[in-house]
Every structure is written in C-alpha cells, then in structure tokens.
Length: 335
Length: 216
Ligand SMILES: Cc1cc2nc3c(=O)[nH]c(=O)nc-3n(C[C@H](O)[C@H](O)[C@H](O)COP(=O)(O)OP(=O)(O)OC[C@H]3O[C@@H](n4cnc5c(N)ncnc54)[C@H](O)[C@@H]3O)c2cc1C
Ligand code: FES
Ligand code: FES
Image (cartoon, rainbow over all chains, first blue to last red; front, side, top):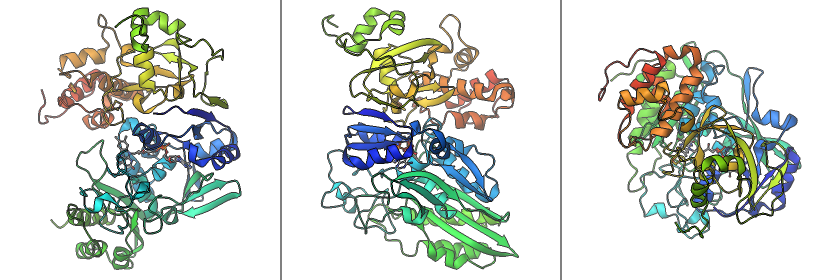
C-alpha cells in the first residue's frame, strides 16, 4: 500500500465536506475490508482515508444503531454483518436479512464488514481486480469477460460490462423494498435500494449512485405483516470463504391461500442485484404449488444470455429459486 | 543479518521482545516524533503519513508501536513487536492464519491497520498458554491430533478460544455445528477440521460429535 494519512472527524458534515473537497485523493473507510483489499492490489492509491467509525454523537449513534421503527427496522450503515447475522429480533418476516448476513464471507470478516460497505464494495471480477489489466471499468476499451474466462460473470443485464454485483446483503434488502438514507452537504435524502445501483449501460465505471461527499447513514426496512416470510439461499464452490455462484432472496405473504407482495431477487447473475419482474408476475395472486414455482423459475431466467462458460448458472439459479419458494410457502419439494 | 542493516524484524529480534514492548516508542532512524501515542480511535486526529505512535494492550501487557498508518496490525505484530503467533498467509482476509482477538472478537489482523487497535485489547495465541503450561484447549488439540503442519493452528486456536469465551457457562451445550461455524474462516489445507471440532467439544465439556467422516 502507498503511504496515506488516517483522518478522524466527529461529525457527518465535516466528513462530507472533506470528501467533497478532493474526492480523487480521499476514500471513506468503514470496516475497510474492501478498501484495504483494493489498496493492497494497487488499484487505488489515495492520500487520505477518512474514518467513518470516528463519527460521534447523534450522527455516530444513527450509523451504529439497530432500531425498530413502526414495525420496520432502521439499520445503521456501520452495523456489522456479524451483528445482523446474530440479531435475534429480526423475526420470521425478515429472515432473509439475517440469513444473507450470516452467509457472506467468514466470521472474522463479518466482525469487521459493515452493512454500508457491503452495499458499496467494488466488483470481484478478476479482470477488474488485476492491477495490470485496464478493463472497461477502469477506463479501458473493453470488458475482458466477453472473450476471456467468464465462468463467474453475468447472464442477465450484461453489457457493456459483464461483472456480477458482489453484495450479498443487497439481495436481501432488494427483496424487502429497503431504502437508504444518504447525508450530503445539501441535506439528507432517501434512495430506494433499487435506485442505488447503476447498471453498466448507464455508466460502466461505477456501481452505485452516491456522489463524492454522499454518506450512507442508515438502511430502512419497511414494516411487515406477521404473515410475511422471506429467505436467502446461495450455492458456492466452497461452503465458506467464497462468493456465491448464484443466490436468491424471496419475500411474500400467503393470506387466504394466495401469494401477495411477492419479491424475487437474483444475485451473481447480473451487474446489479437483479429483481425478476417476470417471476413476480407469475407468482403474484396465485396459490402456491410446485408447478407454479417451476414456472416462475423458468420465467425468471427466460431472458438469460449466458456467455461461453457460465451457462450452468441458469439451472443453478432456477433450482435455488424453486427451493426458496418451497421453503417460504412450506410446500414440500416434489423430488 | 548484518547488524548495520536495520530491518524492523532483524533489529527487534536482537533487542528482545520484552524491551521492545516497553521501550519501542521510536524507530531507530526517526527521532522526530514527539507526539504522545494515540490511545483511542475516536478522538479527532490526522495521523501520518509518517510513523506515529499507537498504544494498546497486547496479550495482557501495554504495548506501543510507532508505525505509518498504512502498516497492518499483522505487520506491526510480526515485524515491529516480534509477536509471530499470528501467521501471514493470504494477506487478504481469506485464510484466517492471522486471526487475533480484538476486545474478545476474532479479527483478521492482515485486513486491519495497526492504528485501528489504539486503546484496544489484542490477544494472540501466545496469551492462551505457554509450552510448559498449555491451556486446556491447547492440550486438547494435542490429544486429538488437531494439527498437522500447524500453519493454521494459531488462528484456529484463537477462533476456538473466542467461541469458548463467548459461550461462557453454556459452553457445555456447544454443538459440532457451532464449532464448525466458528472456524469457518480458518482454512486448514491439512484437513484437521474434525479433530479441531472434537478437541473444542471436549474442552467445553459438551457431548462429542456424532460419528462423521474422518473422525478420529
Ligand atoms: C474471504 C472473503 C469472502 C467474502 N465473501 C463475501 C460474500 O460472500 N458476500 C459479500 O457480500 N461480500 C463478501 N466479502 C466482501 C466483504 O463482505 C466486503 O468487502 C465488506 O462487506 C465491505 O464492507 P466494509 O465495511 O469493510 O467496507 P469498506 O471497505 O470500508 O468500504 C467499501 C466501499 O464503500 C465505501 N463506503 C463504506 N461505507 C460507506 C458509507 N456509509 N457511505 C458512503 N460510502 C461508504 C468506501 O468508501 C469503500 O469504497 C468477502 C470478503 C472476504 C475477504
Ligand atoms: S493472512 Fe490474514 S486472513 Fe490470510
Ligand atoms: S494443520 Fe496444516 S494447515 Fe492446518
């Protein structure tokens, strides 16, 4: 890592002003797991790391708090994945949040990694992470995944970059219609989680919509009825240490024998956490059944365009989605 | 190593750890910093980029080390303080060989900065027991043959010790699954996992694992 200074400031306005002044040479640091990795790889060489964890007083309390709010939850951006994973008060309606947090990375990493940092981490694509390869994301002319080893890359929503979004937590938050509260010198604003992520067709150089000086303060989970169920499932090459090959988060309520409020989110298939309107349309208002779930899974992947080496993701994610739907609706698996 | 070339590790090996822990406020070639050491991570400050002193508790004793902000906790422990229990393997948070406890919580020292532990309590494998007086957990590792090459072992022991501490009086209810979860970040290329699980359950006074593949 190149030399840098560590800057500790106690208010959000000071941190934000500092970042807005010289964004090219400064980086915000939360848990630092992604940032330190990028610095060690030589992808970036900032002069200054500005520590979010030094923020104190009311600002600090909001960023580290985990509080119930009118039946929903307000999650501080500095809450760790370990805290989310072991948070017993997330009852069944919010199970996917806990399951996703518990599934990411390893115990030691989860003790450091924050919710905000998890959403805003940069892609894990091996071409992007290689210091000598100037890919599309780093201002180069092309995405090397198109012709290279693309076994882990996108099958949906790809182009011109084919990364998959790395955040496990994002998927569960997408299924729960979460939003994020962002501080900036002009005031605070709320962004729906779906609008936080920027597809490469809009701008391949970034994955999120925050500007220099923007700081994520909290993540808001809307209230849920007692009948709501959610779950998160992933398949990995190694059970621990590893990023998923594919993952799903689903949320729905079953009332009067019918599905309502259905959300289907697919991960590690697209450059953004992917919401499947096709699957939701098949499921909404219908009575749960194995046949319905199989149709929804086919619909979810119907527009998939695999690259040379990642066609396996289609049956893998179809299977995961069916399993997740069976699980939240308590319908026994047919086979 | 020629005594005229002052590498951090070489110099400190010569001086001895005890002296280092109490007196290494300065690097030999840098007498310019008269700042008092940083003692907590919340006081507003601009630290570095030059070496700056940071103080914390290391294995029960006060420690001060003068390092640039870019120095990781693992580098400071191994190179500046000659505390080599935590191992350097992947240097990317992906193997757990560098696991230490920070205020009782297992952390990957390679992905932290030394300045992150200002005022904190850092525990390495060295504080668990000595070769003459092994801790219960370490003795159980030996009995259960829970190490082969031993490279992952110090990290494994720290993760397991943290689990036992966390469970306190309910440790006798520990299950094999909980132990597996606790060591899910400790990669062992020799495949000692079932032996580690058995050693931890025995130390906890919990029922032994039901027979699994590879169980001793
Ligand atoms: C072995 C291993 C396995 C892993 N497996 C997984 C996995 O399965 N799933 C998964 O999702 N992740 C995985 N990860 C990645 C890890 O979870 C992320 O790196 C981590 O969550 C990032 O959080 P952080 O707090 O450390 O972020 P930082 O590194 O501190 O920050 C990340 C980025 O976000 C910005 N940022 C952080 N917080 C804010 C904020 N509040 N406002 C504005 N900007 C902010 C920072 O400037 C930085 O650019 C793995 C990591 C390792 C080492
Ligand atoms: S050396 Fe730190 S996790 Fe591998
Ligand atoms: S004993 Fe060799 S790596 Fe674990």
